[in-house]
Each structure stands twice: as C-alpha cells, then as structure tokens.
Length: 401
Ligand code: PLP
Image 1 (cartoon, rainbow, N blue to C red):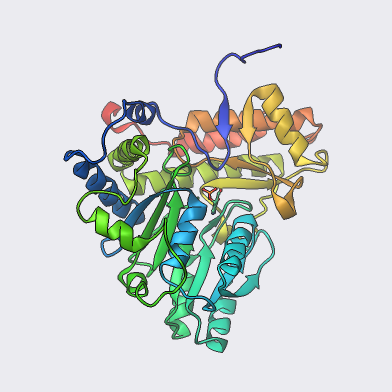
Image 2: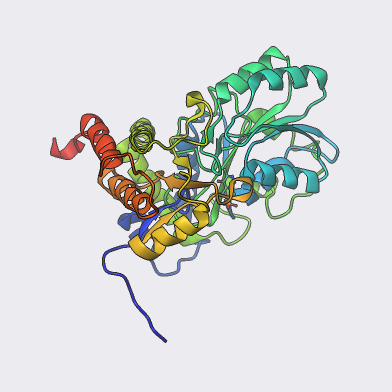
C-alpha cells in the first residue's frame, strides 16, 4: 500500500469544520474527568455564560447539548411548538431546505417561502404572508445560508414581523453566522438561536448550542412535540446545579471555554470586524478575476464564506475542488445540491488570519489558471487586489503594537 504525507500543512478553507487553534486542541487533550465531581460546576457555568456572550444575550437561556447544528434545530422546534403549528420558513439553499424537511417530518404545518438560491429572506414577502396567516407560530430564517454565501437581514425580518403585528417566535439558524457575522439575539428580538461548534467557534463538531428567549421558554409548557434527549426542561433542572442530564462531552466543554477565551480576548466585535475584512478582501480578489458571487445583492454578502460562480472553463466545480485538494493540498467547499458543479466556496470563518487567507486566494488563482481561466487577467491580479486590501485594513497585533 503506497502512502504519502504531503509536506507542509493541509489548508482547510471550507465553511465548517474550521481550523482548530493549538490552544484549543491542547485544552481538549486531557485525561478523563468525572463530571459529577464538585469542581465541574464551574466548567458548566462558565460554558453557559460564554454562550450568552457569543449570542449577545442577557435574557436568553443558553443550552449546550451534545450534538450538531441539526440537533439544535430539533431542540428549538420540539421545546416550543406543537404538532400542526403553522411555521413560515424561507428556503434558499440546502440548509434552509433541510430545516424545512425537519419541520415537516416533525409534523409542523410549513408555509415555505421559496427564493432563488443566491437570494436572502424577502422581508416584504414575509410581512405580507404574516398578515395573511396571523395564526403563525414561528418564522424561521437561516441567517447565513452556507450553500450560497448569503446572509439575510434579521433586523429587517424582525421589523417585518412587528409591522405585521405577528406574535410568532423568530427562530434563527445561526450555524455559520454566530461568532462570525454580527448577531444580536436580544436587540434583534430573536427567540430561538442556534449554532454548532465546528463553525465560527473553531472547535470540532459535537456541540449544539441553543439560546431561548423568555418568550420561547414560555411556550414550553404548552408545546406537545416530543422531546427527550433535547429537552430544555431536563437541561434546566441539571444546569441549575451545574450539571447535565447525561454525560457531557468533557473535552468539548473545555475546548469551548478556551475557544471563547480567545474570542473574548480578541473582543467579539473585533472578531466580527475581522470576518468582514476577510470577506471584503476575498471579494476584491474575485472581482479582479472577473468572477461573480452567487449572492445576488451586496446587502446579503456573507462574511463567513464567499461562494463564486465557476468561470466557463470549469464545467464542473466538483472536479475543480478535487483538483485543488490533489495538487495544492487545499480544501475548498463544493457546490451542493441545486448548485452542485456550478459554484465553489471559500470558507474564511473561525480561526483565520490574512496571511492564511492569502494562501487560499493564491491557490485558487493557480487552480483557475491551471483550468485555463483568467486568460485576460494579469498573473497575480486576484492576490494583488486582496493583499492591497489587507495591507490597508489589517490591524496591528495589540501586544506587539
Ligand atoms: N445550518 C447551516 C447554516 C449549516 O451550515 C449547517 C452545516 O453546515 C447546518 C445547519 C447543519 O449543521 P450540522 O451539520 O452541524 O448538523
């Protein structure tokens, strides 16, 4: 059997799982501990408080479940809604599609607002449909659709709900936005917000993070969907005394606390501003290459990832992504489902810096050229545009300034 380890490092630029910082790896690498020992309470309380900071909530109740973003969706639905409840959901990508599918399988009555892939939530349509359906129990918006690189305008969705006089819960999938894009749970009136550990937190997959507003929690008693593993009530009972209703993933909790220490040290607003710079720099490269984003409106541009339409020389982006992996040891994101083969994705969320991202941009430029694209573009044009932008906008490291 022939084995070969490429020199250097593998360059991971998918929009989750993301690169894990060394200190987080070290925190997770520890001998087993007993989560029932008295000291563990401080770990539980720290993790829960950190989640509130990340979601920008004071009022929300944080939950840290073993699971993934999909599990967090389930927790949100089953703890607040009942069979047959009317929910309005936007569908504009693979993840919003899967969320709709879950709602339907749980027996919710889904009104699905279809949007072209590349669009975000249409607030005008939302207001209108809510006026037609005043009995709607929840509005579900994927904040950052990871298949298309589109970030919807949540404050505008909230305003549409308020204008329609809707009493529905606002449920937000923040799986690829929270901790990367601006997200203000309390200020924006979000009732259920969810994320997963393998995205902006730069942890391994395995934690489903949820925050529930007081209004969402008030629905618990009346909701009749079945909840067992993802029960808020069970979690509340145990979390109140610093424990969990089952064995938590102890390494991931330590990892979460360290990941949050890094985020707090940088400052959440600086983290968010950094992601905005990375997206802007990547889009500057794309513009120099003459490539278009799948996102149709600048106001919806994602700061977590950039999704680019393939130039005509690339007839199937799945081949291109494989080629990048095989030649340059770079992992880019594939086009999924409806846009399979047509787009590729550059993930720039989580633990990332300008120099690393320039590596991805340079590799992409090499790959595009290898495919015969960029014929009318000077060599290094995309890299040049990005590095100009980064030189102008990168911040000094605070302790080295
Ligand atoms: N929602 C969004 C926006 C996602 O990007 C993903 C995963 O990539 C999910 C939900 C599903 O999360 P998970 O794969 O952690 O279950």
